[in-house]
Length: 171
Image 1 (cartoon, rainbow, N blue to C red):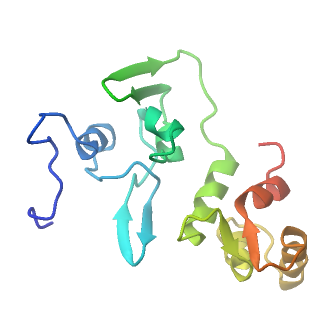
Image 2: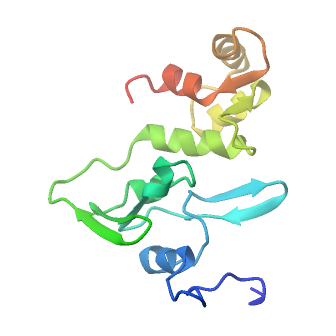
Image 3: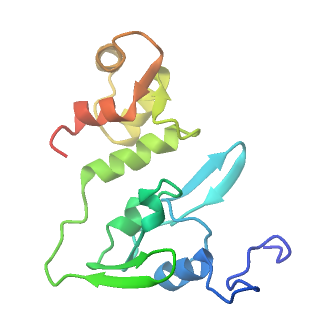
């Protein structure tokens, strides 16, 4: 990577570790973002966390909608999380085993991969691709039926919330 384009791991003015440094310590990957996988924003591929980490990361900034923490960080392999606030980092842990693999998390990740503009919906014609990626029924008749159920107004879009209610109602 061209170092002139790379963001520094440590802020040269304040000496704070950047998000890339935190990600490097938690996952072994010095990526700049905390969402899952990579996102295409206007033709620019931005890399996030490539796989589930051993230690999680949560941010108070997400509650203010300044960022989005992906499920790879929200649901780590071990029940340990770093919680980042504006001024410090707190370590949270539990001795209890936590069910970290939920099918709905995978469904959200795959749905969002087809929602490249992060609008919370996909085009109706992408439903078949989403169902195939989730290894769900993708017979053309079934897909057509589900399109009419998920888009009853024929607006041409399928909302993430509606999709999850239909396929993952108890989650």
